[in-house]
Image 1: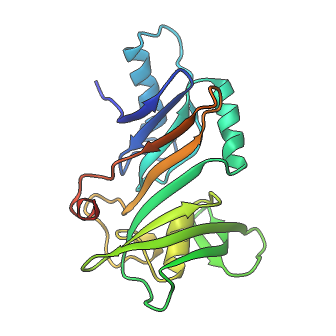
Image 2: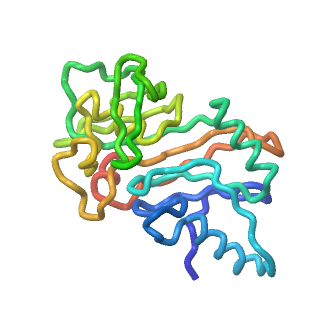
Length: 226
């Protein structure tokens, strides 16, 4: 039986480490989603006779790996959705990029306006308010320079589609493997070197402090930074 990599679970939430390439929620490809696979897993594991309730709290792009939070009750889903909206979930990402412009600071805040073209599944970056563009803010810090790549830690303040990918590319730091946003070549597995490293928040029901960390993929470059 297929099993997700469960990082944390109780009666209200399940938090997993998504593999690169997993589709979080069903789309036009028709591929089986992580949401459906986990529902099937819970049904068998817990020997449930009826339908399994599982709500998706947030999304990760298909080529990205790391922390994904699911809600096992409608109460938890509603409260977690509100917490994300209120920016009460502290999310940290790791990105391995091609070397950026050497003139940019090693630690800074990026503030842009992002506009998504849904047909092309591509996000354009603007420096000034633009029609239909949404404000996007992230904080980055250069953690290490490897031989041919740079490792960044990113803290998101807003959660826009392709935000990290587009904003880092705008400063010349295209994520390794991300051809869509300027990388020089693809990765063999079709993924990109962007990983949702951790999430910290107050549990929506028990009110305890939750901190989960997801190990990056077992791959040479990720292992090098560990």
